[in-house]
Image 1 (cartoon, rainbow, N blue to C red):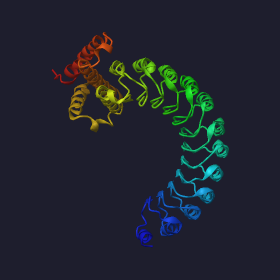
Image 2: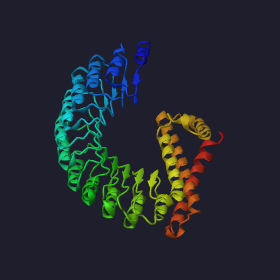
Image 3: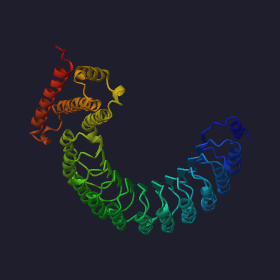
Image 4: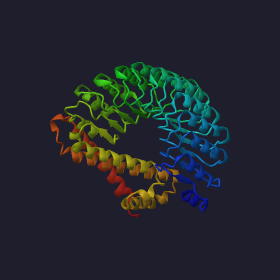
Amino acid sequence: MDTSSRFVLNQSLTKLSFNRKNLGDEKIKLLLDSVKEDVLEELDFQRNLIGPSGAFFIAEFMKRNSSVKILDLSFNTLGVEGAKNLSQFAPSNSTITSLNLSGNTIGSEGLNYMSQFLQQNSSITYLNLRRNAISAPGMEYLSKALSSNASLTSLELGVNQIGSKGLKYLLECYHTNVTLSSLSLENNQLDPESSHYFGDVLQRQPVLRYLNLTVNNLGTDCAVSLSGSLEKNNTLTYLNLEDTQIGTYGAKLFAESLKRNTTLTSLNLSSNKIDNGAVYPFVDLLKHNTTLLSLDLGRNSWSNCKQFYSSLLNNHFITTLTLDMNSKHWALPLLKINEDYTTMNKQTSNWPTSHPLLPPSDQHTIHQFLSNISQYNLPREIQILLVQALLSLRNSYHLYHSKYFLKSFNPHKKTTQPTLATIQQVKLTQLKEIYAYWTHNLITRKEK
């Protein structure tokens, strides 16, 4: 085979990618047989008409190859027998960290074999089983495997049919599992009963950091359970509830609970039939919450989002806010200011490592500052803290100056608090005075 023979000549390859080539089982075998050296780290064979025989050839290759870390077999035709054949390499290979089997229709029976694989493997951290016609019995097999697996951190199970019963089986693994932190269960026929299981896990075993439940009929019960849990949970950073039927009441519950949550950075409540009754609770949330960076409230029943303008003037941390198409012209400038502020703060906290990333003017200012304080023989740790404080003042000055400028062009003055301009002006004046003192009195001052 001409394609595979080329690889005999190049034995230094670390990645072999033949996705969407429709190679079939026999050509896959020829291709793998041509690889003689144990150097490959990634195999990408998605959409190649690989069936049970091809899975056997790949398993045999994995047994003799100890370097492969990433294996992508998504959207092939493995089926139950393919899953059985593929699972055979587990005892001989302890390097695989990522396995993608999405779109292979392995079903619950095939998952039984892959669960045995998980019990024997101690290196895998990512497993993708999307679109595999897996139902509740498969979750029972998987949960038992995860109870003893201490390596898997991310599990993709979207677009299956596990239902509430299957979810209950799956979450039982959290009685002993303390590593599975990312869980994606979108479009899995989950119902309102399912919400209680998640609420219990989030409170009892705070391991989850990423949770995706999109396109499930969870209803208001979901909001009651999860929002209550978020008040006590200190690990979850990402929650996606798009199209889960939580409604306006459910949205208001989340807005209230997030006032007391300090870890969630991304929340998606789009396509949930939320109306204007939830506008004020979220406006109020954005005035108090300093953790949330991304909030998606798009494709809901908003008729007026103008009240969010004042909250964005006061919230300096959120960088992504999705409302409706009409809000983009005034929201985007404010969000861009927040994004710049976040970037500058990261550079500040990482200084001096981030020094080359700073604008030349800032680099020059810092150089002058360090030169002028050199006479005091301060410890390096103190010098770093002083420079970071200087940069922090610069960041705040830039932030308030930018937002006060936009305030003067506020297209929705009637909905803005009348005292906001005064508050912003006072903050701006104070920052100008402090910034001027640092830059002129401490930095550019010549030695007498």
